Image (cartoon, rainbow, N blue to C red; front, side):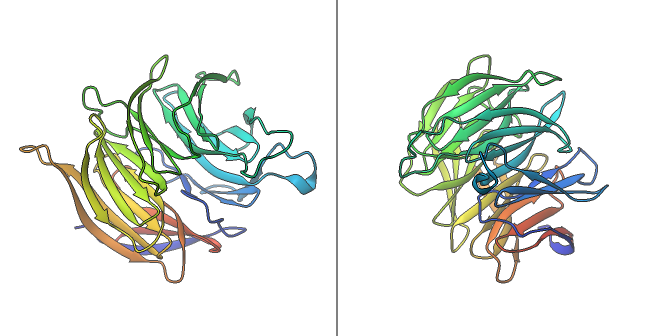
Amino acid sequence: PPRYRRERALALRSSSSALYNNLTVLCPPARPPRAFGAVHGTTLSLLGTEGPPRQLQARGGGSALSTPLLTQATWCELPARVLLVLTSQRGVQMYEADGSTLVFWHALDVPEHPAAHSVFARGIAAAGGRFICVGTSSGAVLVFDVPPKGANVILSEVLEQHRDPVTDIAAEQGQAPDGAGDLVTADDSGTLCLWRSEEEFTLLGKIPGSGCTCSSVTLWNGIVAAGYGNGQIWLWEARTGQLRAQVSAHARWIYALDLAPLTGKLLSGAEDSFVHVWKLSRNPDTDDVEIQHCHAECVTDTQVCGARFCDPAGDTFAVTGYDLSEILCYGPA
């Protein structure tokens, strides 16, 4: 199995917040990563390979005292353009990839008298070649139709199947088998919904949660890999909703999963300070879903909150941790 070693650390202006999937990497195919982003409170720190670091602020606060907290940031790669999407307690911000220009702002409906639970958006994924999907604390998934250029982004549909706050959304990274759908959404109760993204999104199936939060989810060649608050990774068949494998991956809450589309490598990071690399595969004879452990990396005394591959084959990856003021980069040993 491949081994990895720590290659460098990139300094962040401020540490990373303890949020699920709190690292985003802009990776052009077959080239080294172009930029990294991690959220701290109300700001996103952007580190580019060229130029000085940049800070993006959450929008929608009435005054300086009420700047909303960011919940996530992700580069969404569509065929014609790449947008940097930020979610917060107030809404959804879409920027050009370098963060220079705000393309679109969508405000969430914040009640006049806030209830006991907070309002926020969280969970971001590009889907179907022209859509960007964003989850919300009400369980609704907002589907934005994004033009090839310009700012005429339209909220085209709202998917209302989740009863709990959405945690993460993932699009198919490989080849979807016939009838399997190409998008999965996850929520705080562990419920997963499987969708086909087209002009109108179709719900293909629902995998009920067991009450344990699914914090992060990926989809590859019809295999759903879901990471949970109990430290387990469960592999589901996207087409049938059947459970195919369970792995006790971490001793504590999983905060991040990522997938390398060319190889089926899976990266997991958790509160237990470990990052693991796994490999997913299908046995061509039996069609069984298999998962193999490739590498374990301990980030000493750090709650890992973000972990992302930095290339499509999964030969390099980067990690953020709560209260850690740097992004750690790993490469082949």
